[in-house]
Length: 139
Image (cartoon, rainbow, N blue to C red):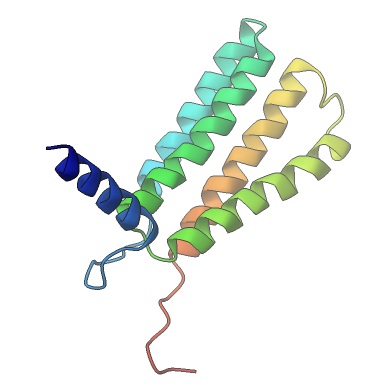
């Protein structure tokens, strides 16, 4: 029994990083990512309205990173490059947004910055997973 559990765990970890060759790789579902973004907006707005700005921002960030990670585990097309590009795009929007938006260090300004960041993250992930696959032997 312990050997089977260990083998199952190793198989799950192996599959997370390297999918089997014949497994279909579809793009990330845009509708599901849109629902995730709307949930982030609602959760952040509720937390901001109750004065818990940091909690709302953290919920928005965690959900916006866990949802694409779940799609990576499910085996979407270009999964790891899409995930890393999405994280980079989110942080690339975050820094200039603090500088451009007036009052970005106040509660609703911080909410707006994180709403832009989560949108950039999820939209980039969806966009990269929709890029065409590279054909074997094509240069």
